[in-house]
Image (cartoon, rainbow, N blue to C red; front, side, top):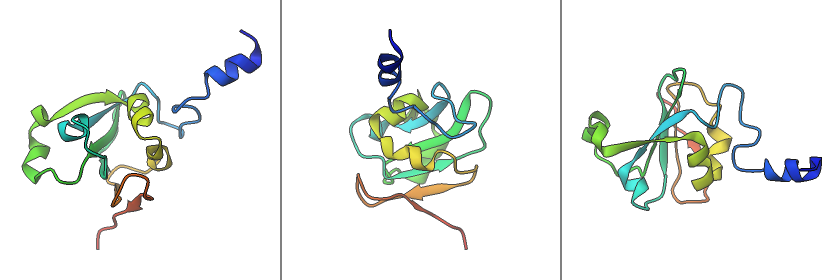
Length: 114
């Protein structure tokens, strides 16, 4: 493969991720999202070696869902970016960050306590 073909082949949703975020790192996705509903709310817990710390939600899940891992499935950062490239703009946010938006395609707004 020549250099141009190689560059084009690597020009995907995971190119140029923020420092410390790798495409193979895991994140958790609400089953509502996996059923086709839009990602409208995300938050980041403390990342660990293979876990990015990110959780993707529709924003309509009840609080009780957060305590029930059966309501989530593990996916990779690469998978998330293929499904919603707008997540790239917030991936570098620190732990304890959360973002929301009203509709798909809208800008992410950071939620600030206080």
